[in-house]
Amino acid sequence: MYGAGSPSEVPALLPAAPKMQRMRGKAEIGVKAGGVGDGEGDASPSLSPSLPPSPSRLAHLYQSGSAKCILPRTHDGICEAVLINTAGGITDGDHLLYEASAAAGARLTLTTQAAERIYKAQGRAPGRLEVSLSLGAGARLDWVPQETILFEGGRLARSLTVQMAADARLLVSEMVVLGRSAMGERVCEGFFGDQWRIHRGGALVYAEAQRLSAPVDLAMVGPGCGQGARAFATLLLIAPDAEDLLDEARAALTRHDGVIGGASAWNGMLALRLLGAQGNRDASALRRAVIDLTTTLRGCPPPRVWNL
Image (cartoon, rainbow, N blue to C red; front, side, top):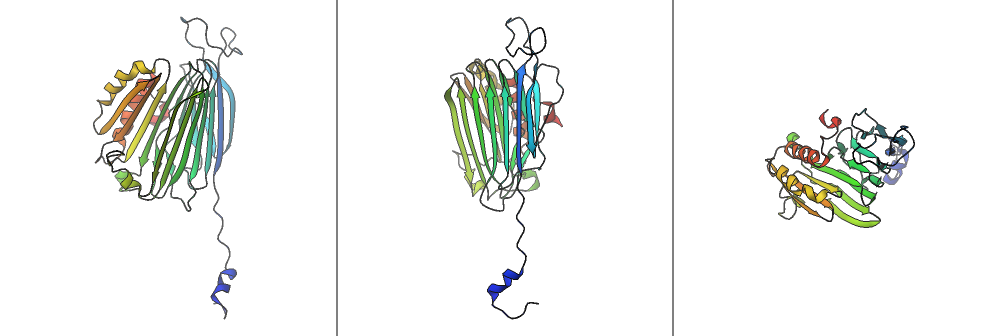
């Protein structure tokens, strides 16, 4: 027991609360096209249109903190990188940075090992996830992470920055899930901010911003917002032939019950917005639609890790 004294003296006798440790992580990967003939050195694409693109190979890899990168073996000439957050998720004060570059003629698929989980924050500062991509002339890069799950009280500020050559090919596929409805979870308190800035040939060609704040569940109810959806996704293809895939993408949308969405194309870009229809118990219908549309836009299925 404490002896006599003013109440203000009591806290000084107690040990200070430990400061919570916060996660930091950075992963960088760069790939180049293999040489034509000697298998090394020449980073330019094949000059003959009758020959398949040269296999892409690793040029640079760096990882620190909680961000790791593994390179599964592939047999199609496309380098595949799987990003891993060893902290298991993101909360307030955490910071993850992913940087990837595909040199001229190179091909890279970038994904994540599992869904990124955004856990309840202890304060007002959000966790941060920054993605920076660079594509050289004739390069192809697919940024197709698995879904982001925002839990009750989670706070995330996310950004995507891209610098790409005029003839490069970029695919971005992002899906966000607001709690696990199959577990009876709801997201009322929380924050999700997302900023995209994409430059092609030195000019800003695509910019968007999303913001969700408390009450999150009510913000998603309005007809101009989410119509009560518990999950949403955005897919964006920027490529010389992107507009040619509009009809095929719209046809793919009609194949999926429990999902509503639309597609539009302009200036060498194709954008799709998807919502998990109100009343769905989980996000599985939306995930199936995202896999189907990603396959349509990539010309091949998503990375194998998506099926694990």
